[in-house]
Amino acid sequence: MALTGKRWLNRRQRRLLMVASVLFALLLWLSPTLRYYTFSLFEYPIHYKEYKHFDIRIPGNYKIHGIDVSKWQSRIDWQRVKAMKVGNIRFSFAFMKATEGSWQSDKQYGGNWENAKKSGLIRGAYHFYLPQVNPKLQAVNFMRVVQLRSGDLPPVVDVEESNGMSGAQIRKGTKTFMDILEQHYGVKPILYTNRDFYKRYFADEPDFKPYILWIAHYHVDELSLPDDANWHFWQHSDEGRVNGINEKVDFNVFYGDSADLRRICVP
Image (tube, rainbow, N blue to C red; front, side):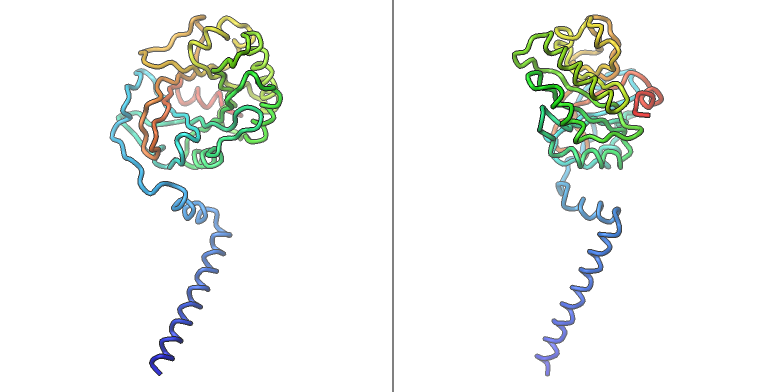
């Protein structure tokens, strides 16, 4: 009798476990919120490093700060990113890599795009442009992956390699790419490059004067451009530390306040 009772309890426990599993699966299917938090348990590293400081010098006199990321930062806990505050500095925006060339997409883009939005950050997506590749095919690749919504930052083209192409070829291809994106999304794209590349290929070029500029330039107290153009975003370091990210991160400031930042977003 004792053995039979033991077997009966085991069968009962198995049935209860099966019912509970079915109910939990049903709840996962019905509740996007439960799915998000459940999958987060498996999606993110168990241990994130915690930082008291950003471990870099932050340029003064700027109110709006942000980061940019790609697959090299691996999986990110965006709630921790948004919650981090050092003094009066916290993050307002984040750019993330979406695509490269005519067919590649960043494997972390989907998660970064959705979870940055959920954390409350203003988000933006960028394309790593290859001058030797057909700009129309590159635009198709970006538009296939990136769906912008109201409140998102304009699309970004990251141009920082010549890859054997002439200045005229780089400018013509970049302009074609940006024209296609502007027609598709209804906003002028952002041009990202480093200061030296800008000086060599884009400075004093009338076709690129109307665009929002995002310039990378490290180890300086302030950013100025050789043609006295106005920049909007300045990537001032690639060695920052942020809670929720285990790798080093690019840091940026925006030239303006929160109202100015919202003003350039997709309407």
